[in-house]
View 1 (cartoon, helix red, strand yellow):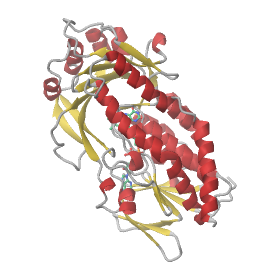
View 2 (spheres, helix red, strand yellow; view 1 turned 90 degrees about the vertical axis):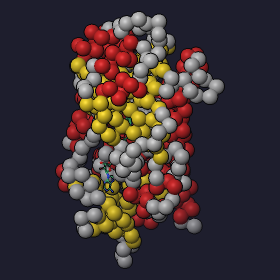
View 3 (cartoon, protein in one colour; view 1 turned 45 degrees about the vertical axis):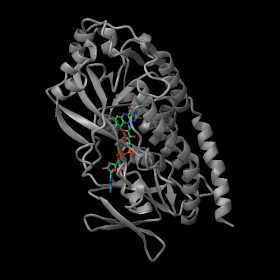
View 4 (cartoon, helix red, strand yellow; view 1 turned 135 degrees about the horizontal axis):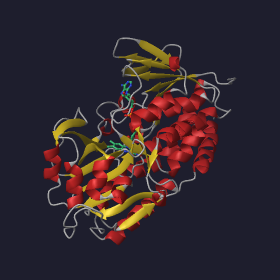
Length: 433
Ligand SMILES: Cc1cc2nc3c(=O)[nH]c(=O)nc-3n(C[C@H](O)[C@H](O)[C@H](O)COP(=O)(O)OP(=O)(O)OC[C@H]3O[C@@H](n4cnc5c(N)ncnc54)[C@H](O)[C@@H]3O)c2cc1C
């Protein structure tokens, strides 16, 4: 593709952020390379879902991303639930004597409903949208410095080096690029444990239907309770039920270096003892050996700026959030779109313009994405009946979810891009003074 761009961009990290950004930039004719520490593209974990804002951002990044999503996504099974995000249930209901159909307390909807994709399947589809030689694998970034010719030099753990005019860090919650920008002693170099963890399990759909009835098993549900909440939604085209059971306590996470640890089904049952029969029955259907995920975020130590010179952070590297709004990856895709819009702008031609583009990115993205981190913490407390002024009042919980989900999903993606372009006008003017 013809381009007037006299620069090369390095993207460090090839997760959802790095890959969607790479696709958006590559198809806008921008010269890029991805440096990924793993031996190939890959994702751990199971289901992930996207709201209307994320779907709109995908389409505008590149239609192939949206096509990949459509190819692998699973929605609620019942047509009458096509706009339902979650039915919210009282997971602590003692009046329910045995597992089976349960009435919802309230329902939250949006224009795209619930849509779960298996992370690895989504990534496998997206990888097809860029040429193979765009990525260098086994490249774990250690440091970055400015070389003699004005290029940035990246140093990798394997002893190799590479150069680029700018570095975009999409290297996740424990970002090395963030540490390079602010130093290892800066608080934002250290994500904090939110004192919540999640058991994750996959259950054959027939068993789930038998246990809790078709309506609840085949469509997304959130079972609320004190100090815990369990969300379930169908994956693998409705053949499997994905179960994520969040629990809150005061203990520290045993190993800061590892975000997951193997646990037993009995641990989950013990944490949820006292819950109603549907929650207990769902947990009993999981495998005896489970994975438990620690929930970390950047809520205690927000990043002061997303850019420094020609280095910038995007996605979880910039604003890792807990998953309670189900919107973290969606915001990563919004980031990719804003960055692509700025770098595509015809006024961004040379390495010196990149700094202005990154400053415009920071101005456009920081407030919204850091709000999500705080709101996600609050909304989880609502699901678990411990938010101040909300408690276990279902009307108030519903109001909080609708208000906050509105900010996330009823978001004008076109305006986000035109605001970023306007910001770029200002930052380019300042850089030319
Ligand atoms: C339990 C859970 C459930 C979630 N559910 C949802 C959901 O339903 N919807 C939603 O929108 N979001 C959800 N999220 C959030 C979402 O998973 C993240 O926001 C998203 O995956 C972040 O993508 P990323 O590419 O920025 O970071 P990552 O996925 O962490 O990718 C970072 C990449 O960088 C690489 N890397 C790291 N360090 C280096 C280095 N030094 N050098 C080179 N490469 C490096 C890694 O190997 C990796 O490939 C959830 C999160 C959790 C924990």
